[in-house]
Figure 1 (cartoon, helix red, strand yellow):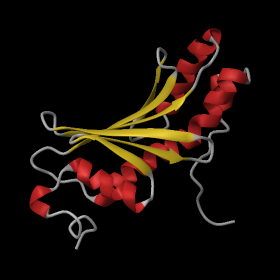
Figure 2 (cartoon, rainbow, N blue to C red; figure 1 turned 180 degrees about the horizontal axis):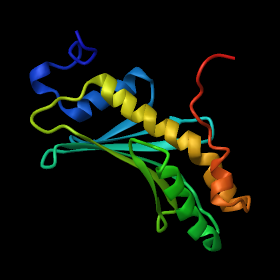
Figure 3 (tube, rainbow, N blue to C red; figure 1 turned 180 degrees about the vertical axis):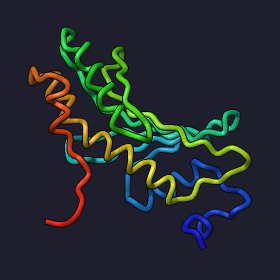
Length: 167
């Protein structure tokens, strides 16, 4: 039996219900803003991240947006955009953008659940985990470009890659 089947009847599963089960399982602070939207705060190694997940029944997409504050000097913005483009070249799921008006770095991902597909708790957990890993991986690079006067390519060299094997 899947983790969500024990908590939610399978004929009434809503994607945000699954997200709520995953958030509760991890003891993350969350708030169900509406039937189709939940927001949570997760503490990472570098900082706290705000995650918003929203379900769009019309598009049949569960959308994840993970944000963190980044307020670089105006003259560094072109280099921030170059850095996020280089970072996006290194990821397969989701991608970064910068919301300059809100001064937020944003990781976005959409899980398409067309044809009455149902997301599993494992899928949602992995989707959230990958967003957090991406933000944690590239946060130091964005910081170096914004305030350390590093060039984008040099800053990405320090982006934490996935570890293989054991030490």
